[in-house]
Image 1 (cartoon, helix red, strand yellow):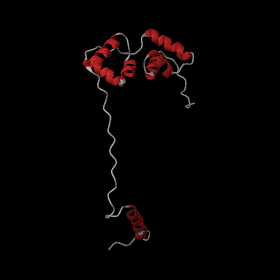
Image 2 (cartoon, helix red, strand yellow):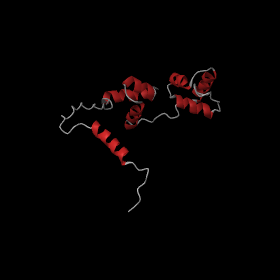
Image 3 (cartoon, one colour):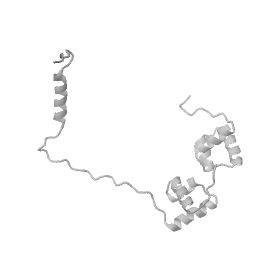
Length: 144
């Protein structure tokens, strides 16, 4: 038989278990009322006519961000619609002229997010293009 550890105190463990048992409902208590589960919303489905409007607006120069806001859908949903319709996506997000303008605006003190909003692209896209141009970025507010 193994020697008993002098630090072992089964009374402490028993008291903890009894405290847990007191928190449990009695087996004779009525079952708690169940709240109805939240119904998850489904992604908005565009009608074929709306999908054609997305395609036409994109071909006319609108960005996926603008179209997402206009139709109340996520930009990724806009991209999926365009791909399903066989539309060739514009890549890069910013022309060389836009990058030049972004560099100037950033040097004037504009934030990446503000420049992105101004140009219809994400702030991270602006950040990437500025870094590619060798622009030294300012520290983020609060990270000084």
